[in-house]
Amino acid sequence: FRFKDSLAEDLQRADLVISHAGAGSCLETLENGKPLIVVINDKLMDNHQLELAKQLHRDGYVLYCNCSTLVETLQSMDLTTLKPFPPGQPEKFASFLDKVFGLQ
Amino acid sequence: TGGHTTEILRLLSCLSESYSPRHYVFADSDKMSEAKICSFEQKRAETFSKSQFTLDRIPRSREVRQSWTSSVVTTLYSILYSVPLTYKRKPDLILCNGPGTCVPVCISAFLLGLLRIKRTIIVYVESICRVETLSLSGKILYYFSDYFIVQWPDLKKKYPKSIYLGRVV
Image (cartoon, rainbow over all chains, first blue to last red; front, side, top):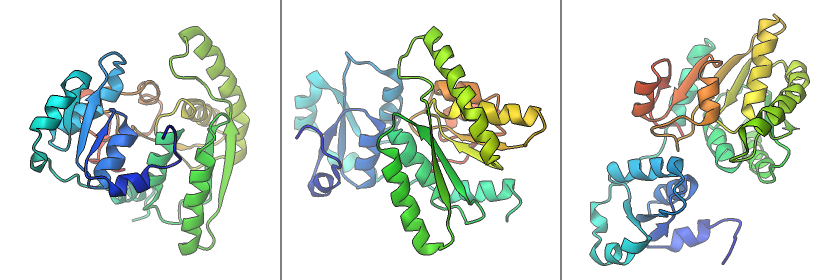
């Protein structure tokens, strides 16, 4: 499938997701509680995209490899080492803004 | 655009109805944001019946990887377009999170503030994708915003005037 409006359905049914380092893809997958392997495209090298993938890996939320090491990663991976991804907290932002405007 | 719209709607998700009416400003080239916004507002109207919002489109100030010189021209054009819009809306608060589209709007608000026409509080929330470096919009608005929020601690260290609340989206 080339371009679908939403991968939400496929994501729900998946046991493992292998994705590029795009922030939307990573976050949507993690929020759905699916194990994720992020594949870095060395040739595209959009450094800003890598920042999030690297951080998520450092924090233990995703596995990480490049195109050439993907097979090896799939063979030797231990998905139990991945930590569950805590949701963001927009309520903290709301609270902050309320203080700014004296609404608390 | 895309990811930015999703993020900003999440930021709005816990705000009370004091933050109303909401004026959404986005790039004319953006096809998907309108649908996402309407869907969000529809859901919101289920809880807050008097909820109000508007949609405004402005010319996109800069395409990804557009050259420096042509970016200055297109951004100036966007600023010219944004000034009357910002003057019309006279917002108390501008909340933005990084697409190039937000820069002309914030600059317009800043100018209107200098001219004592309307004092708008500018709150910038850098995207969650930015862990170690700021986006170009962020680098510019770090100096123009009243509150600059980052979502990762490294950025707080590098930009001491920023505010770190943890991950908010």
